[in-house]
Image 1 (tube, rainbow, N blue to C red):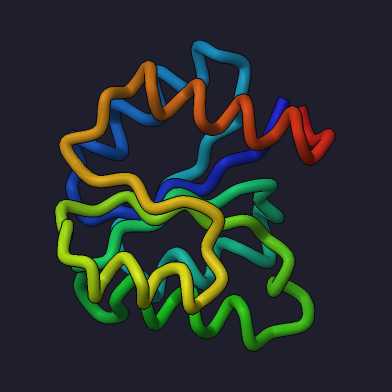
Image 2: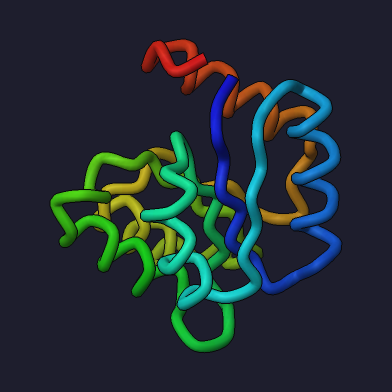
Length: 125
């Protein structure tokens, strides 16, 4: 199964993702802000990142931008998971090279299916 990094400042979101996705067989690591998320990437080496946008220290947009600019991390798939539903934010996410944009509150079963489908297509699962 996959290694998934969940970067979100909402503890309930990270807990739900950790419990549910671990139960599904994935290895989960969490970070509560953008800076901590960037620090965990080279150590954890995730197969996928679930990334919130509105966070302390660095926004999810800035985290995605930095990941895409670094040759070591530019290929890591990113799913943005956010309450921001405006078209401008969705476009900005995709322009940064994310794979999916999921709005909160997300149905955890739907999220798991999206993750599994994506990873199966990539051959990571």
